[in-house]
Structures are given as C-alpha cells and as structure tokens.
Amino acid sequence: MTKIKVTLERSALHRIPEQRKVVKALGLGRVHSSSILPNNASIRGAIEKVAHLVSVEEVDE
Image 1 (cartoon, helix red, strand yellow):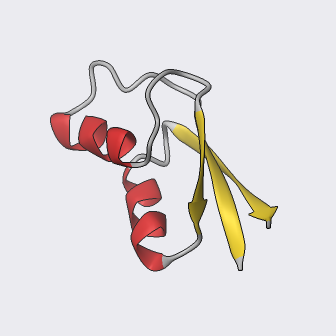
Image 2 (spheres, one colour):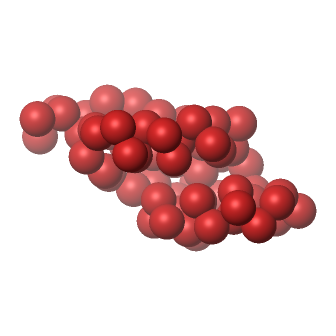
C-alpha cells in the first residue's frame, strides 16, 4: 500500500480555526514538519481542506 508524505509549507497561524485543527490532526506542528500517512479517502479529504498550506508526495513502503 502506498503512503503519502505531507509537509507543512506555510504557517497555519492567522487561519480559520477549522484549518488549524486539520493541520494538527494531520500530525503537523511547525513549518517544514512532515508526516507519513496512509493514502485513503479521509486523509485525502483533510488534505484538500488545507491544500494551500501543504505539499504532498507519494512514498512507497
């Protein structure tokens, strides 16, 4: 199963609270922090909500 690496590229400060919660739920704290997550529909939906703040790349494991 492929996994995806999500990296926080822009700060979540000064964003609406829902977007800050999504960033935290993805396991991202500071700018340039990364998290490797399973590639499923719920994670993809969360990434769509904060797509302007993160970058995504696929990782094979």
